[in-house]
Image (cartoon, rainbow, N blue to C red; front, side, top):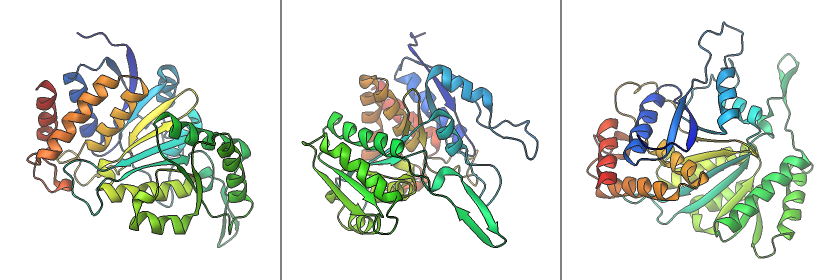
Length: 337
């Protein structure tokens, strides 16, 4: 048995979540990653209708071990419980959502050499959950914007740019319409930009930026923005490299971090051994880099790229016919070499 220097809370999630989580566990074992898993469920299955469905024990485990890896979870649309993702971000103050989108070798798309990073404020904006019915038929949804949240997401974006040798930062906004809320966001990002004079800084209206993004993605590098905009832009970026099934994601706070697959739970193929685990694998590689396990991260990443580049073993969403377990085995074979 290898020495385990890190404990990570593993939350498989719903639908295909357990299958893609098993893939990560098997590949980590093959790569001899010094991690031991603390298995946990986000949902309290004994909760009665109307009760909080969130498993508080899992939250305690994350607080203790600091790091989590989460599979996809389903969220009721137009009713039901609050998104478990939003709940986690609020409870643990995971203020920065980081979504790199980089061209994957062997996956053909319209654009080549895409290399983008969306940094999204993760705790406020339209996702604050502050909404109510003013009078019958009229709903008010509050967009919360605070100086504190704007400053720390701006600091994170510029620090990230410098740490990873990125070329520039763009702030996406709609201050032309939301003059106070997005105006405050821009004001605070500009303040932080002045503290980083060597990092080129630019601003784009959200709609204009999206238009440029899908026509010339190389115009951007690191993009920082409020919550809702980041949710949209990061998915647009995912489309440029082949979809959410290839896109990693991290939610970073001062003390805790959760890495996750952001695609859906795909209940229609759950249990059929058809799921693509690449997104969760790439998210787990982000986690390894966060833990400074760089050699293990590189080994697994190279193995995934090699399998995709060869193109003989692929899941259905990537144009292949391979099962989840077959794809996992192909990556393990590359690791073992």
